[in-house]
Length: 148
Image (tube, rainbow, N blue to C red; front, side, top):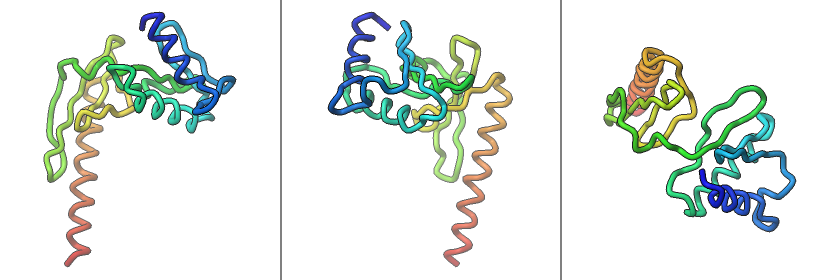
């Protein structure tokens, strides 16, 4: 992210009237990643909503990672990347794509929306998708049984 982009991001987040307020517990690094403590998920959600609704950036702010006591927010650079795996799940054939980031981690997109879980192996991501598909189909079957 450029220095100008970081300034816009900082100004947007630290707005004293619309918040999140200056002095809240977050940190913006030189790459434009925002780090928020894991015990403050409400602040992380508020920052994402504020940035994404501002329409001042061409990419969406998403949760990139969580660990080591922090939630890392950053702009989604994979949205335009080619998927390494594509499938459809559920009875309505929801599109699911798996994309690989620069750190060799795999991220799942469901209907062009990024999931916050990262996988170290493609096989694990595929297993997660299959489990999700089974859960969706099971819920539909249970719903149909209730209607009868």
